[in-house]
Length: 172
Image (cartoon, rainbow, N blue to C red; front, side, top):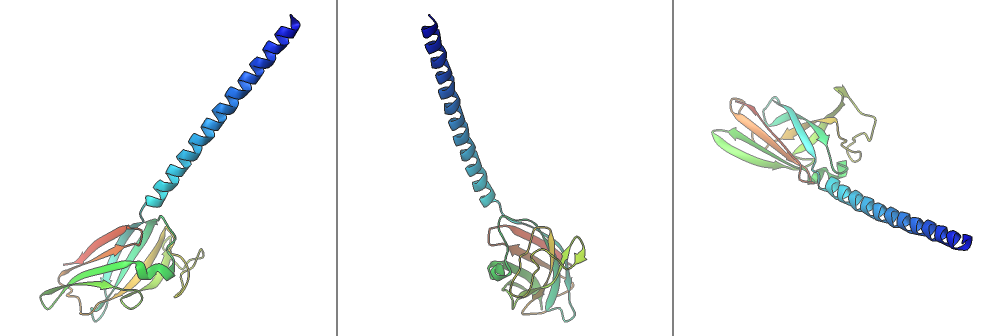
C-alpha cells in the first residue's frame, strides 16, 4: 500500500507543480500585455503646455512670451524646435494678421527658468543642443512681420510635434 500512496503523493505534487507553472505563465503573459498597453498609452500622451504671460516689446514687432512644459510624451530637443508650430494672430492698421513663426528666425529662446530661477542644470538649452524638460519655463522672443497694435487683442498658439497644444490671448 505504501507504494500506491507514494505514487499518489508524487502524482499530486506533480499536478500541483503543473498547475502552479501554468498559472505563473498565464500571469506573466497578462502582465506583459498590460505593460505593453501602458507603454502604448504613454506614447499617445501629448505634451501639455501652459502659456503664462505675453508682453509686447518696444517697437511692437516683437513680444516676450513665457510658457511652461507641464508634461511631455517625448524628449523635446533644441534640434527639433523647428517642428514646433507657433502661430500668432494680431492687428496692425485695422487689419488682422496670422503668422506661423518658424525657429529660429520667427522665434527663439530668450531665457530658461526652473522653479522661478533663471538657468538650468539638467539638459541645459543652448543654441544647438539641450532639451526642454517638463517643468521648465521658456521665455521666448517672437518676431512678427508687422507691429502689433497694443490696444487690440493678440494671441499665440503653440503646437508641439506630438500634438500637444497651448494657447493664450493678451492685450485689448
